Length: 409
Ligand code: DI6
Ligand code: FE
Image (cartoon, rainbow, N blue to C red):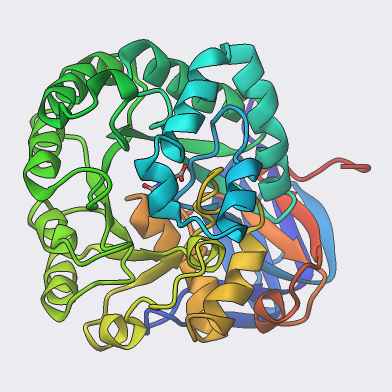
């Protein structure tokens, strides 16, 4: 049976298409046509060919603003337990790094994640996913990294895939075996990296890995260890990304750029040479204002430097229990503007067009013929409102893979 054709009118489109990397591509009184899960036509309603060649279902946008479905390109959404106790400890004076060094931090989430079975993990992760979907998210990246053994990493990646089946959302999985040193490898980081390298082909063969990431930091893995993981990824033709320069300038961004990384993420301590290397390699910068806020960092990522070198900036939640227990991508838009001084145009492009790029996905993040029909319809007049109001819930409808929500959705 041919796929149904849909025509949406009475709306303002923010297509994110334009000659400048941060163009909103606004079209007033627009029409958008899709068939199945693919956009066929986008433009002013007055230019819409009529009658449309196929019978079509008509949808009244009721004056909504329509953007591409949002993309949360950096999350650690699958984990067991929480770290509210550590939040309390930090308010009593301990630092994030102190807690990590004392065996808390990521290690405590690893313990809770290992103890949970798949169903528990799915049950704990679904409400977090649902909150993101209620913010108009249609694609989400989920990293492993709280299992840190073959069975537990597999379990987390499988849960990530199951989340996609449970809800109308696309999930991209990233293998972050090199997130932290598991307790059984204390003082044996090099041995653990060998284990990570060994896990990779198995998980890849099972179809569980779309990209590979490393936490390159003084409290995690160094440049040499990062390189070993990247070499293994490259041998499997898997794209890489990196948690780079979050707490110090470790030179991770330049290394990742040498591997043609899709993205370098965090980047508060990024140097000029790191930014240049990213620009040359076409690597996207993923900024994570939730982690900056929650850890009370004071050094903002060098946004002017990234602008100067034309490095596209994506924005994401970093949803995780330790440094960003956040499930609102819209809140990140507000924080990216207020804390990092991004313009609203940059911020909205950062959760659409540039977030797609950070995941290596060329078929979404913009509204134009040939792209996926992933849409978010908003009860606001202009994209700036998505950044300006914080704590509000302006989503009207979410269309994933062309599925118009039925009444009551
Ligand atoms: N950087 C982060 O901000 C998170 N992981 C990482 O590599 C923190 C994860 C956690 O504290 O549980
Ligand atoms: Fe992260």
